[in-house]
Amino acid sequence: MWQQVFSLRMLITLLMGYAAGLPLLLIGSTMQAWMTESGVDLKVIGMASLIGLPYSLKFLWSPLIDRFPLWPSRRRGWMTLSQVGLVIALLVLSQFNPAANIEAVVITAIVIAFLSSTQDITIDAYRREILSEEELGLGSSLYVVGYRIGILVAGALALLMADNWKTIEGAPNWPLVYQMMAIAMSVGLLITLIAPKEDAKLEQPRTLQEAVIGPFVEFFKRDGALTVLAFILLYKVGDSMAANMTTPFMLLKGYTKTDIATVVKGLGLFALIGGGILGGILCMRWGNLKSLWFFGFLQAISTAGFSWLSVSEVSMLNLSIVIGFENFSAGLGTSAYSAFMASMTNKKFTATQYALLTALMAVPRTVLSSPTGVMAEMMGWNMFFLFCTVIAMPGMLLIPVLTRKTAT
Image (tube, rainbow, N blue to C red; front, side):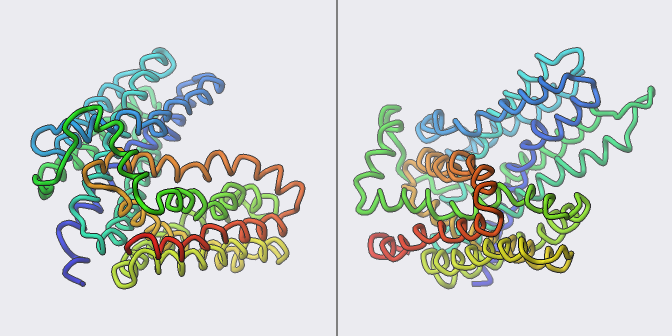
């Protein structure tokens, strides 16, 4: 087993996670900081959140990636193309002043979002195709760890650079920051070029029509297809609903922003990474479905922890226990959950099926979490978090059904 843990494939998976995570904040909160310091109107900055729309719509062009292979191989070719595009687009973005060229900044950022989401599609498909079924859990967790590292580089490190690198006029040197981020992105391109080649014998769609329709036909012909979709939708619904309100809860409870930053961004991050790595290793030993059951139980307990926090005194120790356990169990659950979704894809249509399943996975985080503020006001924090604990049960009750209908 340890040969699999410390293999080149796992290292490549980790580094590709970094490449996938890097662009996200460069067109998100980091770019918003640049806009703010450049004097861009707050209304425009708020509307700029729509720049990330391609991440939600990536399944629309994923059939093209399944159908048309590029040099040097089916998946690495699309990764190379998107990563070269990302490096160039970041360099182009660095040439604009948001205050004077906001249209050019927004258009370039949309291009970056499109290229980044295309990179995500191909990395997800590549990871599925180079890892064995038993390696998917650890591979998924290492991908998430790399993704977090990419976010830290594009977020905390970029802001630190902007604070310390000044122009002649004394303003933050944002163009230089984005040029350095372009160099950081080029690391992903180097990794892609040295990454092991996927199996060239894998079947692929013969026509574009087959690439568009085939993923749906193949998936829904399976025994238990609707059960799989219901499980993906419900497994993390309680966790997602609770997570949507944890920051307002902590602030209203009396914890300061410094308390939250120290515990959530410090202890929480290490707990999430540790949980992800351990979860991946346990998935290799237990299989995905057994891991999903145990990790889902721990996720439910961690949500109930916020209910306990709501009736306990304000204490950094209490906050650390709840946040640490919540992030640790989230890391465990995410590794098995991602591995399960990957295992549910057919390698002929990996890009399209994975993109569609991840879009479904995002529904609890977006649509189903939208009324949580109203619910918390009506129910009170204690009952709200208990409700989020209970609502996690239907997803877990589907696991025995999945065990009968699918292979681990």
